[in-house]
Image (cartoon, rainbow, N blue to C red):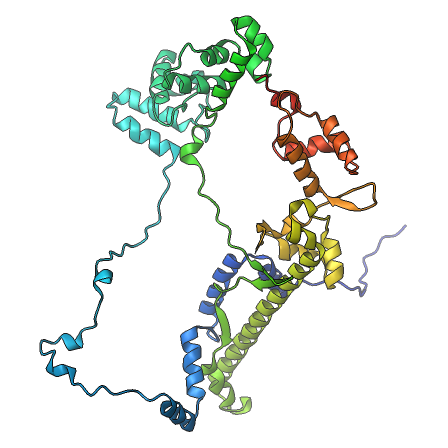
Length: 478
């Protein structure tokens, strides 16, 4: 069989992602705050885009009034002339100065300076420098501080620290105890057990029942074997339960008190207000710059015909025309984004009307495909609209993806949202008798009694997603 090279021409349809299409999809997906930065960058790069403010708008409207209309307005609102010449009474120049009330002059205006957060390592090193340690100990202490993780625990074994620094294990132990005496209490521990013991010792509760349980019966405590602890320590089970409650007040991750991340503030992209019996959707775009085409370049495009222009003028016209097309396209894309977001939110309100009226227990199962079919859009477009965006409604602030969840079938043939099922499970566990907590099987039986078909494994999965411990770890003896 002979092999030969040949060229063939074939035609087939394909979707080409042009740069403009890619930018349109990006603008649809980004939240409002990020879009604000993108639009400001576009204003800086495109001279045909300008931001409209209220002052400019009011001035433009005033310029549009004819001289006759302006004269009529002056006649309708005459200015009363004061017959008194106040300059005779104010000879010291006070007439030229603006009056400022006494209450306003006493206000001190301070510039808002962003507060920087101190890391755990910086906080510990600052405390160490006040202790006046010897240079060799200070060097070892800095190495140990650098070996702490975000929880405040020592991530590197002490033997490896001694080998890396060339110091004896006794010196490493001695310097580590210095670090363990710093704030926050519990840092420098090598494991959870040592972290809890450091905090109890700082409280002055050494050799107490909680101390003995952690020091000698920690494995039984982790597995909630309270009767076994009571038998070995010759005390009542109630005393062990009380000691466990004290231990529960300790912080297993003390380092996060200092190195915790800044809180993440959410700015809603959409607002839902209830007006009478209906819900009105508003776009929270008051922080976005309002764009329009700058009229200063219209004369360049209308001055001469292209055939009469020089080479430099032709290039100028082509540049302005390209920027004009880009500016028009951007304004149309922003308007299309606005309409799409409102359309998607209105569809969510129609599908989840009971949630907005009655609460989370009435949240229905909803998929992106259902919304896309109703608003005649592609599922990926709906996904981009809901990605990373939040809505503020009378029930609170929710991510748009909150309203989409899988469903569970009921005996009546209706579907119940998985979020509603989680809320029911959480309510059942909150109201249970802690001396006899509900098992996953018992919760599934109770849900069956309410007409909800759910398996025990599904109950366990939802309970883990809610960060709720199993029944044996929720049991209390007192």
